[in-house]
Length: 133
Image 1 (cartoon, rainbow, N blue to C red):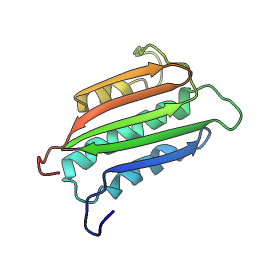
Image 2: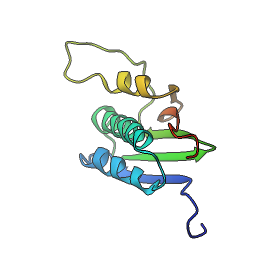
Image 3: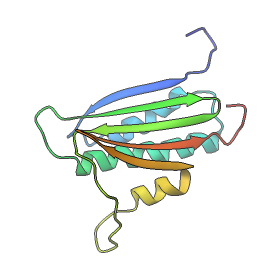
Image 4: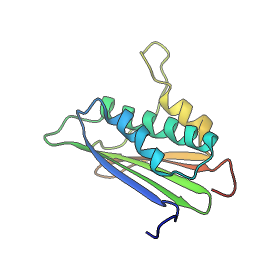
């Protein structure tokens, strides 16, 4: 990458049992150092909620990992979080602790979804607030 060129992709992998993974993922977003504050906040919200869900809900397997990828293309961001689960159907049960992570992602993202084929991928698409990002 040329000096001064904006970063276009961030990838990280965390141990499935790493309770600091959501915080580390949120901090990694700062590598997009040319973002406006509103876009930075939105990216931090979605990545930390998705990683927290993976750490909390993915099945425990030996050497299980959570992988994140945040990619930028022409002012759009695609966020993916991969874990060893087999996919799931999102539900919100207000009697359970938490349960609002995907609701928050849905409020911030233009679109989002869940793919499960041997592992779980939860993805979302965001548009930068500042069109020049």
